[in-house]
Length: 388
Ligand SMILES: *Cc1c(COP(=O)(O)O)cnc(C)c1O
Image (cartoon, rainbow, N blue to C red):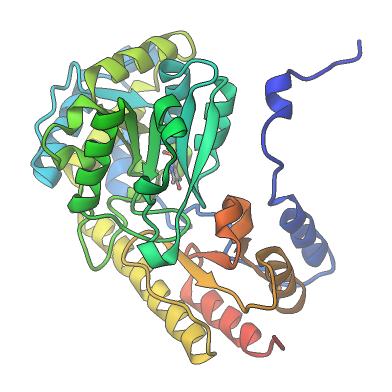
């Protein structure tokens, strides 16, 4: 049989990190010590108290059976309590909360629940690639909203043409933002809710980094009066508690959108291991645990070390108030791919070229602060010797 892939795989944008992946393998194969600021996957372990809860819950036979699609009651109750403590927003655990097998799962499935072929999704660029691919899988059409430094990396909603507004069904936003490290305030969320209400849009707020913040406390879009009429917000334990491999997150907000998502999920998956949900509930119950606080301090120290080091070398790096990313403008005579290649070939340092996150990411590179301080120092020494 000559296997021919489904057309929906052919319409995905090209994988722009392939060049860097290949170069990285070449440099490592040549015996060089590669310092990898590439992937945003925490290097620190999950806090002990969460692991211990999983170990204990794993021995409980009722948890070994199929889990409820929407999430076990203990987990949803813990989410409601955390949300109320953290954002002062009341959620109905039955209708306004749904368990996700990581927030990426929710992002991937939401367009299937919300859009018809030809509908438009408004997506930020640079941005997390799943907003685009999930829209395409659902037969939708992505419309890119550029995030520019002049506007604090917030999209300019007034620049979206009338014809696109009419066809748009979903609006994706992500603050604190990957890759730019930018944050949004409540006034921005108010504008987004007003825009969505005026144009009958579903807002998907990706809040994966809401707890990875230093000089500020990121708000929730659900703090805006009336936001539940149009918005869902996706949260994840991945970055907050160093649990990327556990695959656990949740969505909150508009009950009709969540019910539609639940229907897709009921046909795609059968929940997440209940012991993982029980451990996640414990994590949320103790969200101010010392181990969680210590982790934020570690990211802050790494950020300060890297940004101050780059500034001393004359780079225009600035400290992100949140996320574990540093988004740095590159010299004018390079594009982001060639500059990332230069760093890799000459300094054996891996960064992600901004263009990999969409056209508006050109002119920047992204460092992920997921490596220890001694490695960051070594990277700075090597970068100082570069001729750029
Ligand atoms: C990491 C990340 C996610 C996905 O996290 P999960 O592990 O799937 O919960 C979602 N959005 C952004 C912007 C991310 O960086």
